[in-house]
Each structure stands twice: as structure tokens, then as C-alpha cells.
Image (cartoon, rainbow over all chains, first blue to last red; front, side):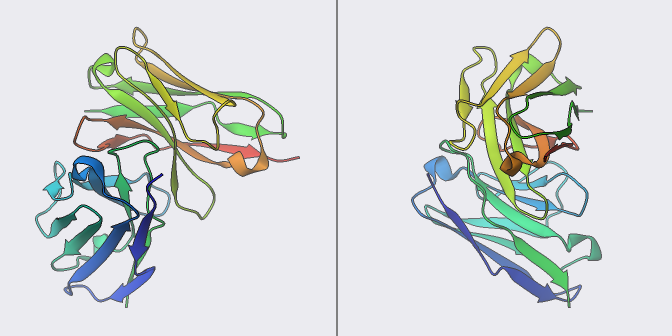
Length: 108
Length: 118
């Protein structure tokens, strides 16, 4: 099983700032099939990035993903108020399809 | 518009059984893999089970293997999760999610809450 470790656990920033979230895998992610989601309270997760760096449909270009192998990063260039949420990475390249424990992005 | 609507959640005692359903619309259901993901109260996301599109090959997390069964009825555009021998630790919101090959899981339902408690 691939274990995904996200850091930091909590990130406190202000609107307009840049956010950098990290996801490290315990072994190489097959096909770089690494996705990022965010989840707001009471809502289902929403896909932001797939294939490590491809934005999902309708996702603004302030969201970008990078990385390969075992180290991946989600960057939000300029935070908007609606971006404050919990962010999860997921590998969907090999079963069991695992998620990271989440990074809470909160307003400073 | 893709829609996924879960149903069947509820409160039940340990050892009980429950069947969840996920009604799909807005896409060719038989052409996509489907998954169940759960989230315990205040916790993160956990993949539970998946099923391929037409051939229906199934897969399970170790935590539910032998107790849960995923299935699909492509004629009814519906995904199911039969849950037996339920435990307190199965308490969670259960989401169904559409899998798009190589492109992650872009569409999720709003979830159905399963509570296992005596």
C-alpha cells in the first residue's frame, strides 16, 4: 500500500498570498496518477488536479500541480476566500487507492 | 450534467447489514469505473471499493474485504454497496465517485451517512 503524507497539517495564510502544499508518497506513484481535491465543510470532495499536473474541468488557473515519482506539490498562486478548505492528495495508480491525511488551509 | 445520488444510509446496530445505492445520470454509466469512498466523522477520506465498467471486476480495501460487496446494474444506472457484519468503525459518510481512466475521480455524490452504534 502506498502511504501518502501531506504537509503541513495546517497552513494559515491570507487572501492574495501564495499557498504551497506537499504530498510525499512512500513509493513511486504509478503513471504519476496523483490527484488533488479540496473539500469544504458539509460538501463532497472536488477534483482540482489529476495526473499530477492537469487541471480538472472548470478549475481556475491559479491552481497548479507539479511533481513526479514520490514528491508532489499543489500551488495556489493567489488565494481567494473560497479556497480555504481541506486539501487531499490521492494516488489512483495502484490499488488500494490511498489518500493523504489532508492539509487544512485556513484564513490567517 | 453528471449527477450521483446516494441513498440507503441509516442507524443500525453492530453486526447488522445495509445496502447503499448510488443512482447515476448525465453520463453513460456502463462506460465508467465506479468507487465507494468513506469519511468517518471529522476524519479523512478512505477508499472502500471499486468496480470496473463493463466487466465488473471488483476490488476492496482490506478493512472491508469479506464483509462488503460492490456491484452495479448498468441497465438501471445504479451502483450498490452491500455491507454486512457492520462495526462501529464503519460509521462514516459514504460517497460514490465516478472514475475516469487516467483522469482521477471528477464526479462525486453528496454522500449518505451510515451510523453503527448499539
